[in-house]
Amino acid sequence: MSDQWHAHTSDEMAPQLEHASHVSPKWMALTFIGMVFGVLFVIIVLVVYFNSYMSSYKSKINETTEAAKASYEEKLAVRERLADPGAGQVRVSINDAMDLVIADYEGAGN
Image 1: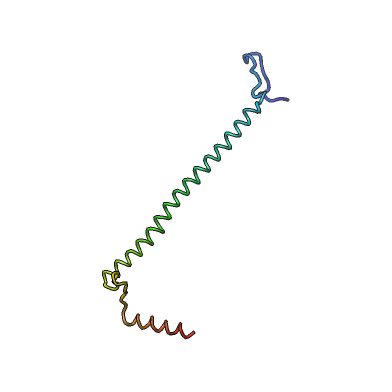
Image 2: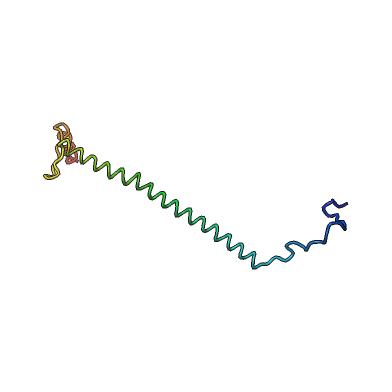
């Protein structure tokens, strides 16, 4: 017994031609190639965007922070009169100086 889908009657109008009876290998190949290039294009766009985003993010986080930190510490040392850039000297407290000398002598004994 067949279902109603296959039961055709005479009042259905003229029969239609068979759909997709002849598949064109040329169009299938062109569609496949188009899809491959489409996927590659999306991947390339994502890689370029990610690299662009990450390079700006890294420069904002790493380079700016470290450069600003060193510059801030130098300005602070000059402002507190701990460093004299013209003379190339750094002033330290007597306790820190003694600790540095002791560390030098301990290292020289080995």
